[in-house]
Amino acid sequence: MDGLIGQSDGPIRLAVFLGVFLAMALVELLWPKRTLSVSKGKRWLTNLGISVTDSLVLRLMAMLAVPVAAVAAAFYAQAHQIGLLNNVAWPQWLKIVVALLALDLAIWAQHLASHKVPLFWRLHQVHHADRDIDVTTAVRFHPVEIALSMLWKIVVVVPLGASPLAVFLFEVILNACAMFNHANIALPAWLDGVLRMFVVTPDMHRVHHSVLRREHDSNYGFNLSLWDRLFRTYTAQPEAGHQGMTIGLTPYQSEAPTKLGWSL
Ligand SMILES: [Zn+2]
Image (cartoon, rainbow, N blue to C red; front, side):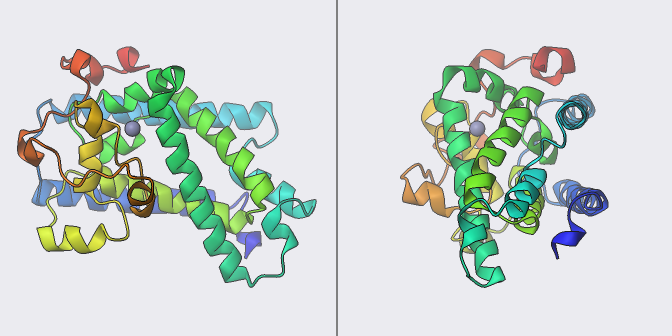
């Protein structure tokens, strides 16, 4: 299976990204949760512009320092038999499950750190400055934050000994889940309730984009809702309600966050 991953996984990533992106954008049009406060055209152009910049930065990193990518790190660990999962005789499926869980916890911890460490918070504010939250918010991350995230994944992948397939699956799932939980979609309350027993739903993640500090310092998860419950950083609903709450950051309730230059 690992043979699939590596040089040829690009089209699969792109197909999943485009498929989920278009599906979410369509559902947002049909069943929107909140009325957006800023013009969608400008915001989308900026958010997608940031995303393109991110891809270029990752490409550049890959060109400069032999594939600096989490998948490449997994291949390296496998070839050299480094890391926990490369040295145990567990069935393949179990190794993949353990790797997915460990990576999800690692990204949860990174997100927590990006709220608690001042320098990381500066970078992460680009994501939170968005005054509306929809599918494009999911790709609105400062390129330096994206680069740091990639390095962090490498730091986790090698001692863990996660297989290239597990890392690939994790990255694709994370990307799809982020687009789902940032989407401005109105799920029926019962469906939201069932889903959030397992995964982070749009209503759960919207709390995290509140201007109120105690609300945006909660619900750090992107995939599983488990970590926030386990570490007591879970907030079920926004105090002002999903329609009444203000999204973004208090100092930046202007047009500025819709501009690409300002954001970067
Ligand atoms: Zn955050």
